[in-house]
Image (spheres, helix red, strand yellow):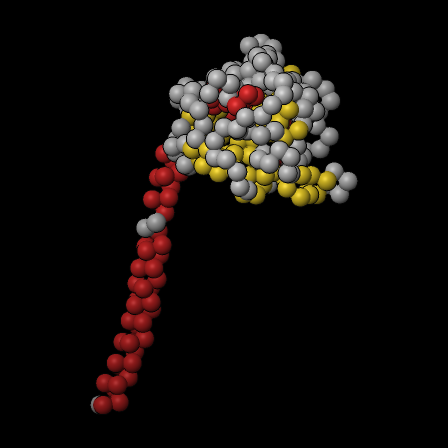
Length: 262
């Protein structure tokens, strides 16, 4: 009788053990899941599509880029990357001439404000012989700046004195979920004219979709944006910005070039 009682207790324990394990696993899963809504809510609030936005496209002047855009270090800044450096967290004064048609970076923000610099960085050079990253650029001393934003802030095309036709200001040479490259000419390269790289943002999903479709179709056309047109939102508390003149990375803090009158 005792043996039967012991056997019955053992069987009961074996039956209960999977239940207890499953309950513990459920508790762990629920604990892990409890963080996900907080993260997804934050991302959703920052990356909401722009209401009522619509986008056009323009024919690109030949030739097209000589390699896939996502593999081109002049178009996709992620390939080069960048590294923090020291320097003035504010506008700096350079001597020399200036272009009255240069893009004016206050227009990046809805309130046309002077950017608040929270971090300065150096973009890496690119060795085209090996198609590999080189050392950080040191002239000028800063080639990418992070400007303060609030998550969800709309980001707009800075105005310049140039037009690429049909009322448009820039072509979208490259776009991903979190970065975009804007060109102030209709060329599929950065050789001539101004190029603006923006990092750490949420590109508006319809714009990203349009870019991906034209990119897959051979880049005969690419999305085009008007001056002041919103193209995405700040993803977090800052957005990264690099600007180039005929391929050369410039200092985004330069008052006389990009922040005139500030």
